[in-house]
Image (cartoon, rainbow, N blue to C red; front, side, top):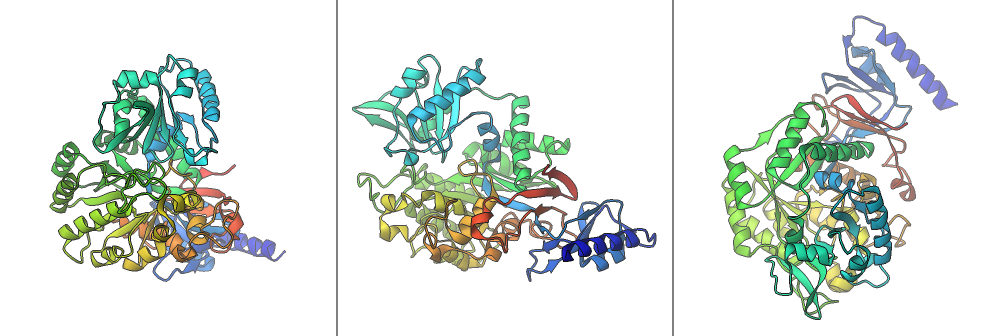
Length: 548
C-alpha cells in the first residue's frame, strides 16, 4: 500500500511539473527508480532526464522535474536501474554465426550430438556443410575427445565441422578431412592434428582447425548482416549495450561500420582486430578509428589455446596428461614482433593467455615494451592461470586483466584434474588481479559461455554454478564484491576501452545507456541472480528492447 501511494504521488508530481512551460524540454525523464549511477562514490538517485542522447539531470524526482519537462516519462516503479552493461570480451560476430549453426551446447554424449545434427540437417536440406558448435567432452560420461567414426556413419556424404565450446578444437568427419587433404603427416604450426593408431581421429586443435575452416562456405553480405542483427537482438535482451568483439577481420569491422552508419546496427562495439602481419600493416596505416558507436583501436593476439582442450601453455606438464605442457599458437619471436609493432603505434594490445607459461611470456613482453608506468591499457585476456610470482607484473606496468568469471564456474569440475590442486590455486584469482591496479574488466566470452551477464555477476561474487554448487563457493579468495563486479561490467570496462569519459556510468554529459531490471543485483539472493530479467534496455536514450 505504501508503494502504491508513493507511485501515485510521484505520478501526480510528474504531471504537475511537466505541465509547467518554464522548464526545459527533455526527450525522456525516468523517475521513481532505484538508480545506481556507478560514479566515483557509487551514489544512488531516483530520477534522471535525457536530452539529445545524454544525461542532463540526475537526482531525486523533485529536482529533476523541477528542471525539465518531457512528453515521454517513464515510471520505474522502484525497480533497479543501472548503466548499460558491457561485455568486455566476447565474440559478437561469432555469436551471430553460432545462431545460424547447429547448437551443441550442453550435449551429454556424441550420440546426442548426432541426433541434434540430424534435426539441423532436416531444417537445412540444402546445406552442403553441416556446421555446429558447443560440444564439450568434459560434460560426457567418458571425458575423452570424440572420433570421426560416429560422424562418418551418420553423415557419409556431407562434410561436417563442429567447433568445441571454447573455439579451440574442431571435430570433423572423413569427408571434411579428405576435402582438406589432411593425413597423418599433416602438420599445423600452433595446432595439432590428433592421431590414434597413426591416423587422424577427426579432432583438430587450435590452428589446425583452419585447414578445414578455410573450406567452409563464405557468407554473403546479406548473411553477415543477418548474423550481426541476430547477435544484437540477443545482447539487448540481456542489457548489453557495449560489446568487445575479441578477434574479427577488418572486413567484418567495415561491415559493422556501414550498418551502424545506416542506423541498422545500434549496439556499441569494440572490435579487436585479429592480428596478422597483413592486418597490422593495414590498420597501422589507417590508424585508430572511432565513431559514436564503433571504437577500433586494439588488436587481438593469441598466445595459447584453452585448458579444456589441453592447448593452454603451462610451465609444467598437465597433471592428467604428463606427456604435454600444451603449446603456443605462435612462436615467441612472432609474438614479440607483433608487440613491438603495436608498441610503436597508438593501438592497444589484447592478448589471449590461459596457461601460466603463456601469461608469463606475454607479461614479460608487455613489460619490455611498456617500460614502466603508462596509460596504454594493454590487456591480458582471460589471465586464467597466472603464477603467483607473475601477478605483480600487472601492477608494475599498468597491465589490465580482462577476465570471464563464468570460466571459473564452468571449469571448476575438472580444473583440478588438469592442473593439480597446488597449481589450481593460481587459477581464476580475480581478487589478486584486481588489487594490482584497482580495476578489472569482465566479459562472458560468449558464445563460449552463455550471453547473460548475470551469470558473470553471480560467478564473480558467489563462485557457484546455477545449482549453488559448491556450497560456500569455489576458491572464494578470488571472489569480488557486488560493487566491484558491477564496476567491472560498466565503468572499469569502459576504462579498458578508453571510453570512461563518455560511457560506463550514469553521470551528467555521458551517453544515456541504461537498463531497468526486475530485481536489484545489489540485494537479490544469490540463487536468484542468474534468472534476473531485463525489463528495458536504452541506448543513447532510445529504447532498443522491452520485455513483453
